[in-house]
Length: 201
Image 1 (tube, rainbow, N blue to C red):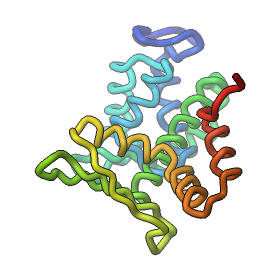
Image 2 (cartoon, rainbow, N blue to C red):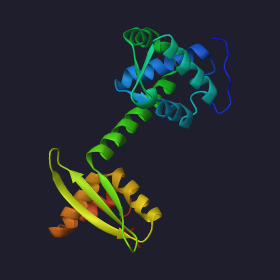
Image 3 (cartoon, one colour):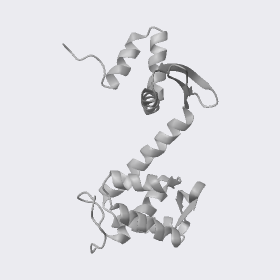
Image 4 (cartoon, helix red, strand yellow):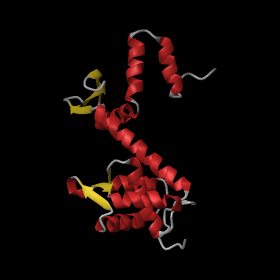
């Protein structure tokens, strides 16, 4: 296939053909089977060096104009694919290098998992006279399994707590449970799995 797309920011093995970039967008949205925002699509492709930013933007606009990508939500930012685009993705996915397909889908699934964790395990940052209270909720489905409040002196630390909590709410819950039940073996196992256990002297 001839190269007809800009290659700035594209890593070796990335896409340099406009048609392949359109196929990638259709394949990505079809594979995760969930709406993604335009910025999410751009970030997934850019962060992995799969295609040029401007080419992806143009491809998204063209696919939307032709009705292959359907936009909705606030400012029409959420993108999903039409039945025609799903068929295109299914028939032509072999036109994409396997490494490109795998990277794009893995990144999208991680993004959706992150959004699910953040939606289910809410964090509130409340300003106080002396700093901020970070209130973390660990969900058990239709109820809170645990919630706790942590004081920090500034907004930077509050956002850091929120970010780190959202990385693995389950580990936070398991560690707290291990500590309050005196289960030191469980606590050590969690620390070891996260690479923070004490190294051998």
